[in-house]
Length: 209
Length: 209
DNA sequence: AAAAGATTGTTGCAATTGCAACAATTCAAA
DNA sequence: TTTGAATTGTTGCAATTGCAACAATCTTTT
Image (cartoon, rainbow over all chains, first blue to last red; front, side):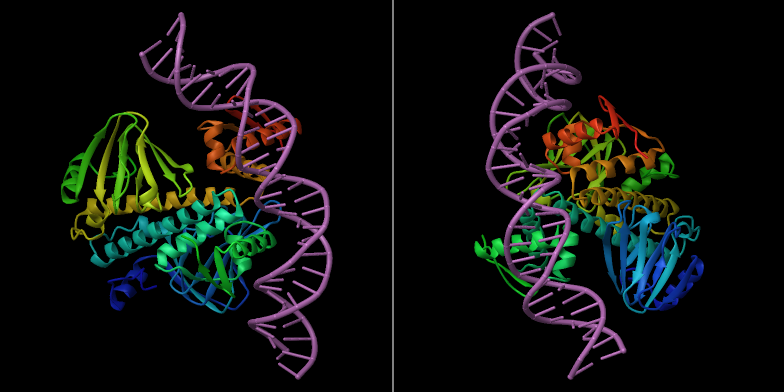
């Protein structure tokens, strides 16, 4: 949230929301918010916890993104086939929806806060690209071991630490790196046995290099 | 190129380039343009053909992106570790470099063409995200067969046709979906034998569904 | 505090894949 | 037009992985 309205006052923010086609929606827990057709919309999580999942033609469900307060999503930012995507609330959530076209076609470019808003949006989207690139780098690795090490190295570089606190469950990690959970579990065991890592719950310590 | 300066006149474009920190660079064929440290730069291919590759700690080289005239690249848009990335010209090329910070910090928001420029940039970055999502969807598949079918389906949906003209070599396709080339070749053979597809050079016809 | 649900660890086994090595073909450059 | 480079097809084999099926922990909810 902060990031999208960075350097925009509350007052200007209100004006902005009136200028653009927006509305704030509230949802209870465990509800499918949008199953499809929400084309060209940008959503910002004001409150809560939301998951974007995708079910392919074989029925495999994948978590595309996990979104927390302040995160942003939308057809243009997250999902490929809105047909097969679902946005599910994990807790009671509040979402600000903005029509993407109303931003792109908005004629009020003379307002400073409008331009700041677009800049912020640009900043957020370039960050998204970086995230995607990270995941691609991992997924492009050919073995589970290399995928794990890739994940660890990226995390370590980003946090400047050789101690990793998994931000999610091992089950979710397996989904993220797109491998079978039990096979990943086995590989983690080998990495431990060979002295590359040490684990204690979701804390992983890198011992190599 | 057109996309970045969409709805901006040549005259305004000139002004814009002076306003921002830009320069136009020319390179001969088969040259490493930037090996690293080009932080926060956006490059636009004015002319030529350029490849972004990455070499990981094991020495595996991956093609991250193939760029043609009008394509855009940069630390923020393409690569994760500028350390390990190379931008290589495949032909004589011309590149327009823009400092990303000079865009974000640019105070000239009152100029209409500046805002149009940012909007265009936003449009381009959201398209990039879509491309990345497509690739992630493919890479997340667990078998070569599913990766290929994913690639085919995405292509078919995008082009509205069941006939695919590969935009690159099979070798590059194998890199793109991150599998061994010979194993992919084998799987394509099976798909042909089972009557799912027909191929003739780089033309692939989908026969299923 | 008990019950239900989710996460984690483990293992055998079959299926899939990467690797290596080579021949055949196509493409590009001199 | 010839020569070298890159692309494509093929196959045996070993390594890796997914799958299935459980048991054991944790977590959450009632």
